[in-house]
Amino acid sequence: MAVLLNEQIRASEVVLTGLRGEQLGVVSRLEALALAKAAGADLVCTSLMSSPPPCSLMAKGKAKAAAQKETAAGRKSGADRQAGGNGKKEKVKELRFTAQIEEHDYDTKLRQADKHLRSGKPVQLVVKASGAKEAAAAKAVIERLVADLKEAGVKDTGIQSGGKGSQVKLNPR
Image (tube, rainbow, N blue to C red; front, top):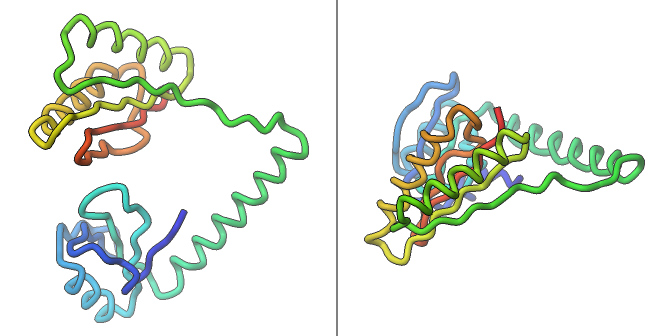
């Protein structure tokens, strides 16, 4: 996982979280950097998957140390897998939808997703949109799917929306 610090962050606006976990809302990058400097902290961005990206204020040096620790732990667990385990990563079932899906097709895909989640497998739901006008419809389909599957699965990631559609990963309960 790449960690972006301070001036490495290029987004014009960020969703900012304070030193104690308080939500400060959407602020400009320059304002966030000024707040970090005033608090003697680093501005840290760990996810570029959403717009604006979520960033938080962390004590100086803490973010780098946490990232190094995480990569070291990842390398160690990789060595453990090669030594004894079969080394296979659990597959995530991806189900694709269109933004203008028919009701019958929706029900069929919903049953498939429910079946996979109840058997203990994670599911990636992807809704493709053909244009900017369908992007809102794609997000609505994703939100409906998450609501319909709330008994079988829980969101692993937030709903990620882009120009070509939306997606979300659900883990089994």
